Image (cartoon, rainbow, N blue to C red):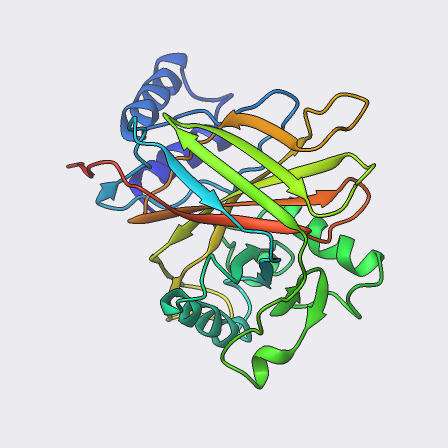
Length: 300
């Protein structure tokens, strides 16, 4: 267990028995060891993953004045969702399949992968540091709506429906549907997103914002994958949902604003925006891309 995690674990376990100055020391040590930028937006709760293990370098996305712009175009961009766990011995092959998409020219343009890590295998020996109960809830939500036959890992969901095609193919077909243009701009850590649907939509829409981690290497000491080192991309580090900021007249285009940031020890970050109806998990349109990285901060 890394030193910082040992201190925090000890403080949490024995907080009633330790003197106050020791707890204050632990808190100060923790604050000096990580760089935190709070993610928030009006009426938009953050669903963050568990704290990640320390590495020798800590990086965060750049908050430069350069404006980033991501646009889907009118043709539908598919979402490829993988539900996975570091505690599941059947998951590494599916994650390797997902990792291969990183080199595809269709990435961000025709489809976008996301790896949602789930918690329900944590009990068998290894707690996945990227897993959250809200990822479990999303996967179970697909099942409750009849879009998947069961809940299991590894499980792929393609555009809101269970998909087993990864076992037979190395890619995903391009959608031909015209659904509307989703445009996201990011400047100084703030995003502005608009969606202009191809057809009239009298429903309120939700915007999903997910920060993705890449090049995440984890040595697994226990559980079904004991002794293995997992290299993972497209890992969902947090997932937020924002209601549209439309008036009651619901006049197009839809729009959302908020702040974007995340604390993570990794070399690359990405961001994905997608929209759905308020009563459905099915993605309507998606866009995203890599985030520019700030200069790396070396720690002793």
